[in-house]
Image: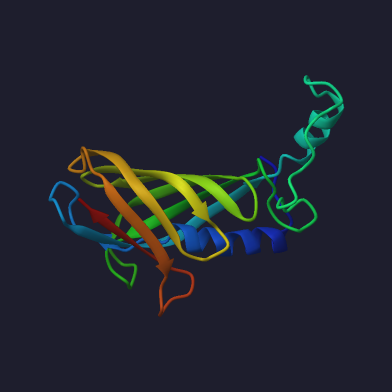
Length: 180
C-alpha cells in the first residue's frame, strides 16, 4: 500500500471517520432490536492505483479502441478515483465516553465514481461478529449499509447499519444496527 501525503490522508480520514464510527447496538439474535456502538478510528490506509490506470491504457487487451472515461468520473478532481481503495480500522465502544471497549471494526472500500464506493464492513464484538456490505456515498459523511450476516450471537443477522458523526465528539462515529 502506498501512503498519501499527510494532508490527503487527513482528508481521507475525515471520510473514514464518517464511514466508520459506531454506536452500541442491541443483540442481533433478537428480532427487531437495535445495537448502538461508538467508533474511534485507529488507522486509515489509502491505495492509489494510478500506475495501474497508466498500464491499462498502454497495454489494453481489447486493442486501442478502449472506452473513454465516463463524463461523471472524478478523473480531473483531487481525491480518490475509480479503483482506488480505502481501508479503515476502528475501535468500538459501548458508551459515548469511549471507556468500555467492546470490539473492533474494519471497513474496506473500493471507489467507483463521484465519491461513491462499494464498502465491506466487519465488526468483531466479544460475543460474535457482524458483516455489512453494499454501495456507499462517501461524500455525504453518513453511511448506510445492509447487514448481511454474522457469527456467534449474531449468527444469521440481517438488517441495516447507519453511521453518523457524533454531535458531541467530531472524531467519533455513532453506528446503529437495526436488526430484523
